[in-house]
Length: 138
Image (cartoon, rainbow, N blue to C red; front, side, top):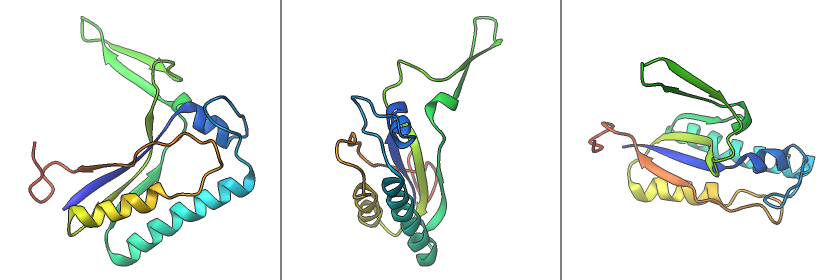
């Protein structure tokens, strides 16, 4: 079964990783960033080695996002980030092909243990089966 394992964050988290602290996130230093990248990279490497990794990506900050909707006449309405109304966003993901929900839960728990500086906001790691992937529901 294929699953999407999602890591969440907020613009303040990206700002913190860039060295700018706020009430939501402390400033990360180079050692903090290196530990996080090495930890997440090791997860991807282990999943590739086991044959479970389909894809994985980290995403850029919400400030670089673009929202596209349509108006009443069907014309595109484009809004560039950041979006003050957005609290949490997708920060990165893995698509994995696992034997069971228990196995992907083990992977998500490992992701949740990623080293971070003290005071960083805690978000759940979200697991979603991919629709149509080995019987996933609509």
